Image (cartoon, rainbow, N blue to C red):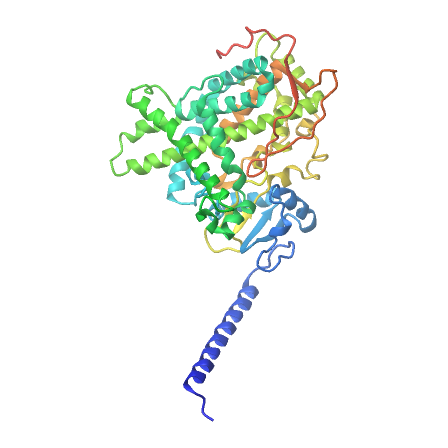
Length: 511
């Protein structure tokens, strides 16, 4: 019996499909044979990979546990994304520093654009736009240029002390004001009011909305269900869309308001003698041809906004970690204060000229970087050409809590950075907490100076201790931390009092 026409077509279709499947399987097997072996890691489940095994709020804790099982390189699959977790500074430097040409891209994060974070060049792809923004940033914040900001940093640190003595209960707000005032000064030459400046509120609000959504583990929700951004407002689940729009609006406001301020004062010739990032580059832009000005201005706005976003939250969070450490480890505080009193005396406050003579204070700063890295997971890297892995995750906390390198890693012990002769060791956590390779933080040196000026000034002027109730009993508490890209201790009960020798005339903001 001869098959019908429909039957012959069905047989032909079956043969074609079978051939396609066999060809695909053959290619898959050949690729697996030719592909170098993957690092060890937990066995992924079909379709979803290892996503259910990862702590979405604190993924670095999961990666740290896996390091003990699988080693310094751990292969992880998050849905359809292959990732390699690097738990070693040595390996991270070998890839991100020595092979930075191909390890400097960013993987796709589904939350970056919807939440408005593409205004920050730290999250955009490795290319011409990133290079221009990075170059503008680097011109202002490279080591030899960052030195000129020291008077501003020290002046703002002393203003912070006045606020701490007057209203110690609002210490988190004073830390944020310090961080914002330094950043706004060096970027826009904008002078914040000592308290309750509107731009501080704008910046804090803008970042709070999006920071929790900027890790791969959180972004996976939008990648898997992109339709959530198109749901009507009345529908269940539309809160993600509303949060994304609110975040975008707040970040645009944070980018536009101070930039317009700089442009306005530039037009009034108010910045002729200034050297802050935006006014300095606006003057350069006047000499460019009309065609290149829009590109230059867009890159400048990205660089400026990135500088603000990259400094305010991280500096504030670092100072919170420092305050928590001084309250929790009073012996460390007393030793650092004794060193300051011995070197500087009690008739003046420390300046940057004293820094080299204060090794223990320097070790306190290093231990603060190590003890609670503010971005414990960092921002994922991606390869820009053919290679084995799509993502590279670099959990800084895994390095900073390595018990072989840092015994009793959970304790705050500045002595680990002091040798037997009382000098600083070569181990500086800043080498990994600020990132590696071409994607390393270009504002590292200015950030380091800001935090040092705040820490040394607080140590010289105030005491941090446990808060007590009306009966004189210590108030016990369990520290709480923010989640997302930034991991910061939240405000906690704390007593902040001026040291016995501190007089109002000693805390002089004129440096």
